[in-house]
Length: 335
Ligand code: AQP
Image (cartoon, rainbow, N blue to C red; front, side, top):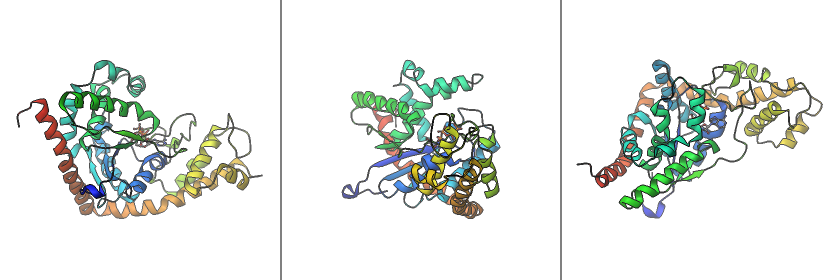
């Protein structure tokens, strides 16, 4: 991170939940982009394991997914020397700031969050307070690091807007406590849909493993999953209503090859869905191969991995501590 005002870059904060193994949706929609923006911004990236527990997690699986998720960020090109990379639960400032923010957030505001409404419908037997206050924890994540920009999909925009409302409210009462954050939207075309139901987002916590391709899936599994992807019963590789499955495969193929829709349609002119699916599978598997190899190397070096998350946590706490101290003092908590 740069400290001198002449070099001051904007600060970016982003996180990913270890709620499963990372999919190509997570890779294309988030992690790949994180590796790319490190040059331009001062970045803070975290494995958001606190957020993951708003839904029931098996403790052993959560531990494994947290470690694997951290290793995956490094394998995909997030550089722990250049960016701050850490595990959310290692920094207690997040939950400490969250308390202060909770007291400046209205029940009505949290009730209006569409993700809360969606998730309460999906997990109707476990509508816990954590699910309800998820947006104030997310606001704490952002505000602790005085982030200028938050890379998010459209589904998270409402949460960043709530963080902005909290900033305006608390800055209005206490003076200049927090930077007002903005969304940083990824380039178009990054939303990857489920291979089992192309009208649904590909998700790592989907109970059907055929619905997603994990970054760590071996080559034959990747090809098999693409070959069994749900498509329509027609022919022709182009986008049209009713051909959402083919459209999704085109999005994925395009993201990994840089080819346009027209180029893809021309490349597969006269060929069947089977040929296209195999080509997508092989392309994706080959593109992921170097990441899988780096992941295996990094994961084998447990001491290196631990050293990375410990130094990441120290750097994170150095920054977040400044904000937390300022807030606690202003609110009236004794030092
Ligand atoms: N299908 C997707 N296409 C593009 N981007 C995606 N992201 C997730 N799925 C896709 C992006 O990945 C980042 C991390 O997401 P997250 O783990 O914080 O939560 P999520 O969006 O809820 O991801 P999942 O995989 O769907 O997790 P579960 O199954 O636990 O709900 C975000 O930047 C997100 O946009």
